[in-house]
Image (cartoon, rainbow, N blue to C red):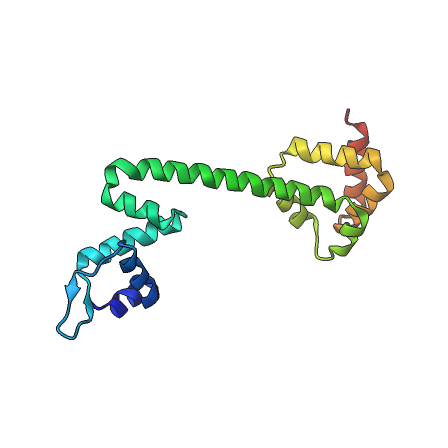
Length: 174
């Protein structure tokens, strides 16, 4: 197949395949009589592998190394990539926790208009909050500013009875 056919088949641009050729990642198998690049089924499979490894976030130079020595380098590269992803997720959780803390700031909180209990709990859960963390958060909020804690719960659209239960539980906890 031609470079354009291969690019279309994989949802890539022709320029991407030209770049892959330039860096030695995916070479054409030859040229047609009209000087168009020719790619075989093996090149098609190699490009499928390249795309799979790119979706893991691996850099192109690492992918080239893997494709040259797959048995030796693949597991180690994927393991390193997994640790990188875990570190990135931890950094994002830290950012989420910071945002949660900043939301305690009254002015910031009042500027958030599209919040409800489900969204709030989803944000906290995504930040790694457990049931115990949620309870501690409510306890701290109730102790430091009970009036604003109540206003926040109203802001989330909770019914009065649920607000009363949360605040009572928060005050009763050690």
